[in-house]
Amino acid sequence: MPSTTNPERGLARYPVYALGRLTKAMHAEIDVPLRDHWVLTFIGENADLTQKKVGESLGIDRSEVVRLIDALEGAGLVERTRDGKDRRKYRLRITEAGRKQCKRTDKLIAEATARVLARLDADEQSTLHRLALTALGETSAAPAP
Image (cartoon, rainbow, N blue to C red; front, top):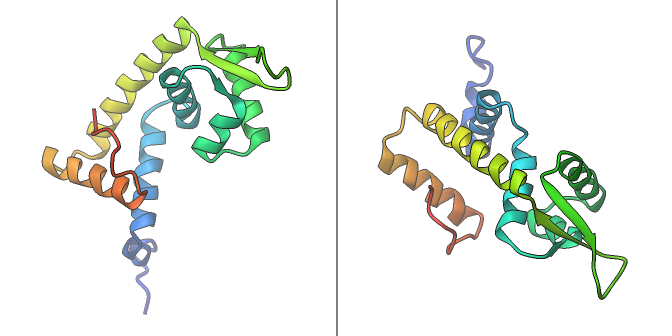
């Protein structure tokens, strides 16, 4: 008979469910859309990207990339310019304001991560991160900050 005291208890057997709960906790801890931050960080770390490359690399639908870039550009965090060789393409560049926003959000994420994962010691947090990256096939990814 299923538990009535904790209706989610049975779902805890799924690792992805548990990781999803951690992600929700992160969203609740900071007041910044994480997806926007991931896109901004990716643009900041990769020079001269196209919108198409952002979508392909981050697994975001093309129309959603346009909406995200519109919002980031409107906030002055990204500049979008026409490609000199192919006028159908846009090249993206992070602005100084975008870099500052990334630094602020990185700090918020680090603080929220510490709170959300407080039940784990530093080695366990590192192991969790490494295992998540391994599950994603990211064996050469950078370690946690």
